[in-house]
Figure 1 (cartoon, rainbow, N blue to C red):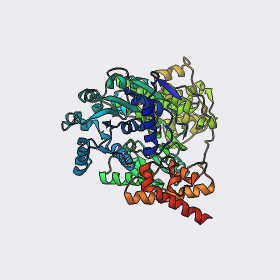
Figure 2 (figure 1 turned 30 degrees about the horizontal axis):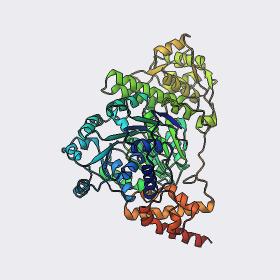
Figure 3 (figure 1 turned 135 degrees about the vertical axis):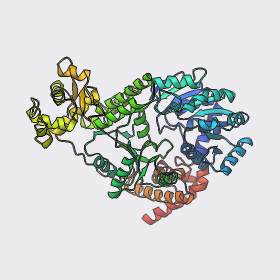
Length: 619
């Protein structure tokens, strides 16, 4: 599905189209483009400036890599925000036999000198740099004389102050483009709402470019949300159901990464903590483990991920609610980049909502920016508390209509709405009568008529609201209080107390001037125990899956020997295709998706021999 396109693309000349297809097969090993790539690549090959919004995993990088290799002359300059991301892409391109390099402060002197030399001799096809690097060392002046024919701006949302990951140095790219002689420009991102898209176009292009907004849908991702009840145990159950697979667990605090990683390790899961407080060597070692191994779970803050292009991440979990839908979408997008099934779980609670609101209020930003950020947080909270299809709600945020998906947690389990005005009034009355300074647990005790030391000491067992909600469990009342907080009927009391107070909206509900509809809360929580799944769910037969796992072990040995990420040898999709087709010679290996000429020469015989030996042993 193509959500939007600014104009029809002119047909590419037959000769140029033929060459592009030949490069696609010979270098990358693919017979056809992924959905959405063909329109973007055609516009780029026709010399147009292009702005493309495509979901993670749709192959955005191919949209500038293929034209760079199709061009007989000239170099493509790629702007990327992270050193790790640049090094990863350069590593993958070199494994394909492509002349690519990055110049950055993390390189050795020899690496940077080799890149400069290749650039000056015209041997380089793609050069990756950060916007910060462009602003230093008179680099733009040097690049101006280096035959740059195209400028590719990756993660283009970083240019917009309305985006979720604004980088001030991206603002200079319009001027850099002019200083380089206004080369053809392609800007790409996976996450940008309408306001952000308009700002990107204004900031990067002198005239409206060809715009392609591909569907934001990632149908291979299973979307699940759950209210926090036993967060560490909930995360552990989810991760254990995918034991043997690579995954990421995101948390909002450094200490939480250590605690959850330890909890998972005690359950026999290979879990590592990752956050900015670790020294560089430790972070690098753990990142390498995650990239090279098949079954490592990284428990991390958002400091981890943007530079990771590992295609076979099978799950992403959020132990704490993300601060925006853009951030959530980008983070779950790190799962299932290979197009195979992947799973997500997001835990949320009133404490998350309160924390995110405080973070926004404490920022040194202007009022308009603060208003926008609160608006985006509100959309994230609505996604957590929605009663309708998750995927439909998510796509609607990005301006894309869709039918209920039938496969998310709400479509599978169903949630009903009810008129909660009376229940809300009971809660609001209890909050008001206790002085607007107590938390959800104490208010729920009062409503359920629970006698404990705190209730009796404060005399709250004498209130008119004591026991008026005995028909519901304490858990159900706490869920209603969380929803009241989410809808803005109550807010935090302040620094002195950690409880709730009524807002103007809450007072209107309490005094009958406004009604309220909430999600019905099941009295007994569904302890959905996760059933163990295979490392990768495919339609392989038992025998084919055994071969696939054997090929994965061979790939791991090669990756370790070469000190590269396993997917740089071959991604899972390619190994799955090998398991199905069972090529035992180089001629048959050419038919496998993802096996280009360079990788055929480098790894083809090893895998063909391994397949032949495996089949002999089984027969």
